[in-house]
Image 1: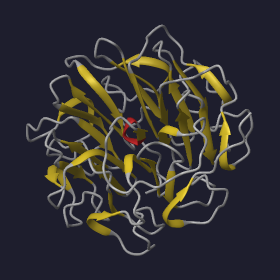
Image 2 (image 1 turned 90 degrees about the horizontal axis):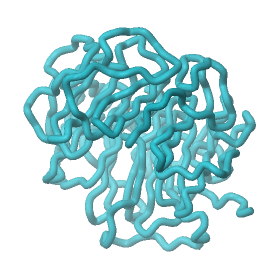
Image 3 (image 1 turned 180 degrees about the vertical axis):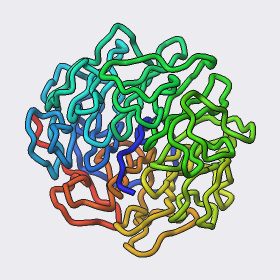
Image 4 (image 1 turned 120 degrees about the vertical axis):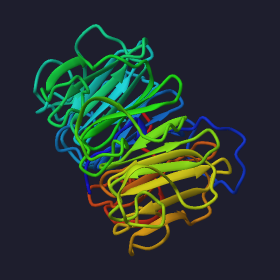
Length: 388
């Protein structure tokens, strides 16, 4: 537990409209109303309607991007205000953004080349990812970043010790390198030490570390190139935790596979699964988010459910008690349009209608963004930063 998130699996974006339920009323200014939040290991970042980037939490390596190494328990604005991206992806010690032009920028820890700028030097402000390739999506986790180019090809940079690149090697790189061919992908996802992607037809392939069955191919064999997930299911999206993976069908039914020591697969047991297994309950989800030892999902009515490890209250059920092996509703009466799980045992959600994000769980480094370092087993509002 405690590894960094993947990322598009940790990306929150309020794309659904007309959700029912009982949304919370906020007094936030429209300028700070968050439409998207992404979670890292002990830090989070968000975008407002103007695509301004704000980050909060741990900042030892400059992963908040404000030009300092000072931890922040409330949001601070990205140092380079000219960068206004439509999407974000956060790794364990670093952060990345993707511009509408297809160019990526990253900042924070770079000892493994995770920033992709051709160096191994940390940066507390964004630096452009090297090379001429452009991306339609990016995903980050631990120390590895991957991007999808407009032609369905995967490029990765950073750490590759477990074959996270999918290019047949375990050689790391501080600039983007092309993954193995054979598939045309439509989306890309990063987990702890593994990577997955969906083809344009919705078939899932995974590669990298597989000791707990997180690749879903029926084995625990490491794979250095993309390998189809067993079962022949067609997914609309995936989300990857540290050592488990989950997918969503068009019907809203969720399936998970891999490590299940604390019930993160949500199937009522703690037994690992080497291939996709259905999540318990007759719940139709519109989005899933997995990380570390817990998983969450939201329904079309805005109800959030979480399951798995709950030592720090990351399930949002009002306790810091035992693990939960099946979906449990987040308490407090909030309605969410999106949700993301953080690797430091925290969770964040975008409320229906926008406004302040809500976060809960571990908060020792200010990763809940509410101005404190106190753990919260129920959703708390991220503070409004100073408006220039």
